[in-house]
Length: 424
Image: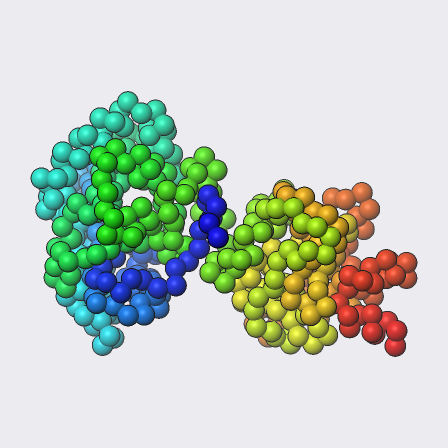
């Protein structure tokens, strides 16, 4: 099945052929999201994608130039960031050397300035051509401004130049134009993949889509790709619609995208005014058609998020990283659980773009026994209802709170054990 625009998932494995993975270390993230310890955690995660390999080199680039373009005195900046870069490099290497699976010479460390200097013959000509295009392309300028604002870099010319230098370097790297100077993979890489904990820059995506230098690197299956370590997603720049793609970082989703890829063909997660996040249909559904599946191991205690599948077993969707955690309650539901509790089906015809909501009364007898996600402490839930429908009760009700007429109305939509208990 062909993937849709702005629809991306994780990858299961990296290619077997020799390759290079590279990432830029932002100096304003070097002590947190890109600390030596955090980078080692990212590395161990990437290792799970290596099933068989002829060799992979890892190249780290430190973004020194942005901070040298500052109002602070040059020697102050130099001393500060030189120390930070050295501490980061040695801290990362120390963690690597404690684990015998890694080969030290596979790891290379440079600043962006070194990369530009080492590749000056190709870089200067390429940068000048792209800069001239940028000066005459209003859309390109708007995207650079967006990236500057998002990164809190300011909108002076020096900040914009840094963004351009960065994305040109990444563009040339992916297109096979730069020498990575990796002692382990000595120019024999068959593929190159950029990593970073967060979404890509608008201007970077635009540059790849524009491909102003008409560069092609067919041996690199990732020549137009970027791997987001934070969201565990491989993005293909050729399938991104920049105008509709979500570039926000605040809306991070606790989702296993590979596990949920079939569900995400039918359902998407969006912010719902007054509710937070919710599930929205990506297509029309007929009555009783399966809308999504609940994936995950079961537990026996209740939390404020558990999805019961029978009287004793429940799925905690935050633990299993299931989209079911974003299913909201409504006094006017349009989906209901299957008999085994593992699927949710349409109660009626549901149109594309509608929010998918169920009545939590379909799932259990009472509220009041919920615990924290680890099952160790009591957790009081907020039972106020914000569904907004005319017949809203103002409170989220359990099955025992329904009047007899409602129990009769919903008898075909509740989990089977509720009807059995009622008969007893």
